[in-house]
Image 1 (cartoon, rainbow, N blue to C red):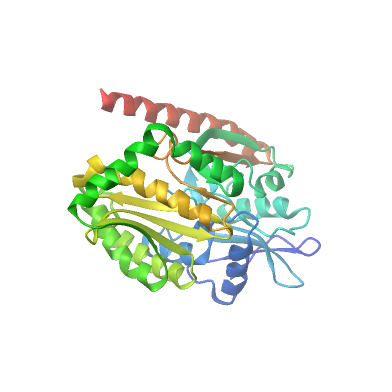
Image 2 (cartoon, helix red, strand yellow):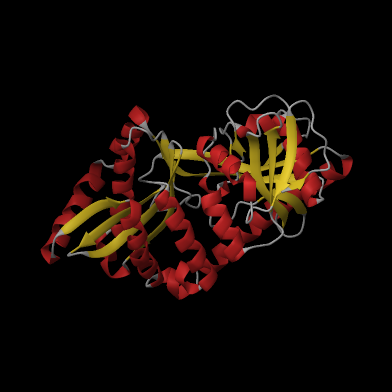
Length: 375
């Protein structure tokens, strides 16, 4: 642990640790991750420790503000230096394509001033006057705490992705998704598939899920992701990270793997991370030889139904890219998020304006590139 140069104010004390070697702070970190007002499995130790150890970078540090009397953490997130778009740097909460959720871990009873101290700590740790939180949901509890600080908050690059609610609202969303043509077509495809053998939809947890994950790795690598070089098995570092993370989450019952199979052969699988009262759809794969049976839609709809049966869950995040053609018609809830940019100093606000433009420019160039590739 590194003590911050920032002094404690009142009962709030800032600290900085190496997230790969948290030592005596691991229990406090885990306690906050397990009870955070906004569940985020990607900022907890079971995910972040193996991710950074196997895939880096080494310069990321875990910033936390704690109660100096009790040692209880009030707010925490990993930070490092990163370009927002094409060139503007910021002290950035370390959300990546492996975990596209930038919500800080927040104690529900965090006192006034926690957000302010947290932002100060991030800038001091990284050495940049601009703080960025990518993939930050508008309705998370941390957002107003950060925006209430005198750091001139500004949302950039707003997006919307699929998710679903729990309870009555989730049931309504399921009814809309599984209706009309889809209500007839998907069961018809299952009946056709059953001509080849027994068809099963099931959820696997615990140690069985660890073993089943090996099947998932092979299934993912056999498809387009393997050919493109983005499957977990394509790179030793991502393979090792994923196996270690999955084992840790299975041990704490934070993992579920949904499987669609015929004659014992998995043809679609969905890896779901469970954190607090939320489910996160982490990875999906299907056998492209069975594409005419809509295995991706079958497993996504099954996962939605299983989530709704778990009365502890209040909703789920698909983590899918905005506009995903398969998941959005099925998971009818919507999660609005943006990159929150915070700056207090004059230099920081100049970077903030440039960073907002930088993000917009990168987004426009990516859209142009996709259109050109389609043509």
